[in-house]
Every structure is written in C-alpha cells, then in structure tokens.
Image (tube, rainbow, N blue to C red):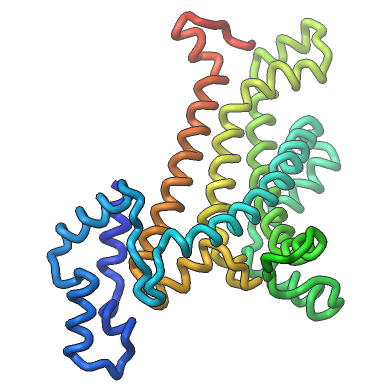
Length: 305
C-alpha cells in the first residue's frame, strides 16, 4: 500500500520529468527519446509493477540527473541521517523520560508548573525558528560553531562533534519537549489510578510504587510516543537538514523533488515509510508485551497491579 501511494504521489507531481531533466531549451525529439529511455512512454501500471519488482530484487534504478545507481547515492546519505537521528535519540530520550517522570512525581509543585510551561513552549516552537536562532547566535554572533553541518570523510571526532552540535541540539530540544510532555501526562494519569493509591495505603515506599507499579504499566504508551518521535527524526528532519545544509537523506529527497528525479524520490520515500512502519510495529509489540491485561487474558501472567 505504501509503495502504491508513493508511486501515485510521484506520478501527480507537476511538470514533465524528461523536460525538467533536459531543460527548457531541449527539443521535442530529445525529450521523447529520454522518455523512452526512462520508460515513461509505458502505461503507469506497467511502470509500477516493474519498479516494485526492482525494489524486491534490490535494484532501485538509476538517478535521472546523475545517471548513477540510486543505491550508491543513498548509502552515504543514510549513514549521515542515521548519525544525526541516533545522536539525537541517545541524548533526547533518556533526558525526556527523566524530566517527564520528575514532573509527574512532583505534580502540582513549583518544579512541575515551571517545567510544564517551558516544555509546552518548546513543543509549540517550530524547528526552523530554533535552528535559525541557533545559527544567528552561535554561528553568526558568537562564531563558536559552524553554520553549515558539513561532514568530511577525513574529519576527526572533534570536527564531527562541532559540525553536528547545532543540528543535534535543535532536534534534542524539540524531541525532548514532546516526549517529556507526553511522559508526564501518561505517568501522571497512572499515578492517579486506584491500584496506585491502594499500594501507597499498604505502606509500599513511594519510589517502589513509581518504579515497579507505575513505570512498568507506562512502558507501552511511552514506547509509542518514543517510536513516533524517533520515526520523525528519520523522516521529518527536512527543515533541520535544510537550515544547516546537512547532507542527509531528507535533504537528498528535497533536491530530488526539485529536479523531478523520481527514482531517488521514490527510494527515499520508501525508506522513510518503512522505517516509520517498523518503529510503530516495534512500539506496538512492546505495548502488548508490557500490558498486564494481555497476560491475564492469555492466562500466562498476572497484572502488575
């Protein structure tokens, strides 16, 4: 279904692919020859089936603009995007979970009210604003960090960290705020349930109530929130990659859309969608595995509470 939607989306893009690739001064014969070479003269269903079977065989086709295999173009960009998304995930997820847990435990207190205001404000702030302000402050004004996140093959660890610092910090702020806000809401709701009150009345220490009773039951919903945000990091960092000129997969897709390089656009879209689906599937599996009701219904376990 995703492959069909991706193919249809590329088909309805305005403009002739061959004409855009050759330029406005190309003759009709040249455009027609390129259309035949690219197989654009064939019916759409036949092109879709050929493209889908090519994906199954690992053949993503060749780029229209560079004539190079799409897989070769994707390999380096995928690594760059994985580095950016991985660094953001490693920093943002633990930070957000700890912050959300503290906000839920201290619900109604000064820390919770202050942190809630900050988190809500950062959640509502768009990435392009945070990224632009970071460039203006740290790159233009203070000149501490580079404005362009360029990764060279011979760069050492220090140069790589300096290049990634601004884009990673921008994404960490946004993702941490979103996950912390949802974590606070999930754990806060669980702490108000009757079995939590019963455990407290029985004299169970508060840290054990939170860690054993509340957190275990919150793993499922929280894993869905984390999966959604990690999927966003892989497929939704187009703005950040554009602001910092980061050579990632999302930037490659934007350039390919502008050039009507459909094989590259289709390959990037399929990678984004596959990553999103797999992460959501993993989150659903974790949610089921840690759902106490699943164990009760199947007769293989007991509810945590």
